Structure formats: structure tokens, C-alpha cells
Image (cartoon, rainbow, N blue to C red; front, side, top):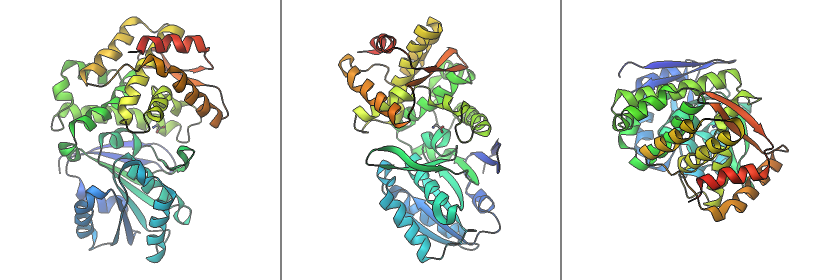
Length: 358
Ligand code: GLY
């Protein structure tokens, strides 16, 4: 185990996000002394790792494994019911615990199962994708999808600890690693410009899983999330800034029938948000150009077909209705200075979209 960095998240209770390499030795301590039974909810490709965890933990804990479908297919009520069934049949009590082992969808489901069993048991999250490490698994949002939309059922449930083991990234496919970078770049634009400097200075080091630069980037991005979540766990206000690039990004994901990587859609959404910021808040040209340059360095897309605008707008309007609110965008007054743009006129949205159209 290399030196681990502990990033605290304030709250009641607060928790730590631990970043390092080869961190399995920390898992028993993360579960804590009172726990007897542990359910490891894991993605299908991680069966061997889940077995290894069972072997590691079985001296101190009774360990059960629940293999769940890959990616979004895990976030269904039937899959949650399967996990509840395992917990029911093994007499899981309120002082037992769940481990979420996998990408963002797996940890969302594992968190949801933990949040709902007996009104809430401990969950230790072990994200294995970069997206999970810097976003999905670290903020306590848990949930599943319904036929009507993504993440419509869920709960805010703080993890007992998040173990961010960078060794997982060594074998992550390159395009998945780069897509995950969209959330790191987002953290750079909304709050942590050092992220942008590091990527521009040496993109190869920035995206090399074994390099200290990538570790620093992950820590900086998690630091942003930890500060925001620590102040506004249940998204009453500030936490909304984490949605920079996501309003249009979600509409693109929907238009692409969720076959695109989340990060690719968010990348385009960030260019749109930057253009909208230039039009409505006077964000300077250099910041907008910088958005495109950085995404380009990471081979992330920054354009989308002009003819898709009406469909995207309709999806954003539907989402708006679902939230019973105005169409809202997170925009930037400057790099590191996010703001909320409420109910912008349609011609402004179209003007910003025209700038990102292929
Ligand atoms: N992914 C946005 C949030 O955690 O609030």
C-alpha cells in the first residue's frame, strides 16, 4: 500500500474518501467493528475480485456476494429486489454492511440497497472507474432508474468510507478513462483551475494511471466534490454547480439512447454551457476556447448536429417539467465562478447551440 490521502467530507456523519494504490488492507477498518455480515454488490466482470475480497474478509466477517448486471442494467428495481432477497435470506441486521464494487451504476445501486434495507445500513464504496472515483461513488447520491427516466427513485445516503484505489485504472480501457476525464475537467472549470493547468501542461502524464499527475488530478476533483457535498449534501443549492455541462449532456445521452459514454455527452454540454456563459454572463473568449482545447487534448467531443436542437430542447423541457421548475443551467462568470442561469430565452439557447453545431 502506498501512502494514502484522506479527503474528509463534512456532515453528520461525515466520512472520508481515501485515495491511493493497493488499498484493500483498509477495507476491514472501513467496515468497522460492529459489522458481522457483509454483502458485496459487484459488477459481473469483477467476480474474481469479489471472491478475493470474500477470502480476505472471511476471518472477521460473514461475506455474501451479489453479482448484478453491468452498467445501467444494474439500476433496476428487480436487481435491488434480488439484493434485498439475499439480505433477507441471510438475516442482515441494521448493524451489517454493504460494499459497492464497480463503476458508477454498481455503486449507485449498492448505495440504494444499503439506504433502503432496514431504513439504512452502512455502505463502503469501492469505485473501479474514474467516473465513479471522482463523481458517482463519492457524494452519497444513490438510486435506480424507472421506465420514465434515470435516477427517479433514490436517496441521499452517505457512505461510511469511499476507497479510491488508483490501481483499478491500470486496466481501464483508454476511452473509458478519457470519458471519465470530463468530470475532472468540469471540476477544473467550476472550482479548481489547477486541474486545467495540469492537463494542458502534459496531457500524457495527466492521463497515465501510474503517474503522480493523474493522482493529483483525481485528488483535486474529489476535493471539489467533497467541499460542495460537505456544504450541501442534499442539493438545496450549492451542489447544483456539479451539474455544469449536464443539462444538455443528459439530453444528448437521451438522444443517443444511453449508448454514449456519460463523459462524452457532458463534454459537449460543457462547451454549450461555456458558449451560453459567453452570451449571457460575459465569460471571456479565452475561457470558451480553453474549454474546446482541453476537451480536444483528451479526445473528447465538442460538437453535435444542428438538426438535433429541437429534440434536445424538448428533452430539456420535459426534464424541467419533471422537476416542476424553470429550465436552469449552470454557467460561469469566470473560470472558478459558477452561477445559475434561470429560464433563459430560447433564442439565446439556440444561439449557444449554433456555436457547438457540427
Ligand atoms: N453528480 C452530481 C452530484 O453528485 O451532485
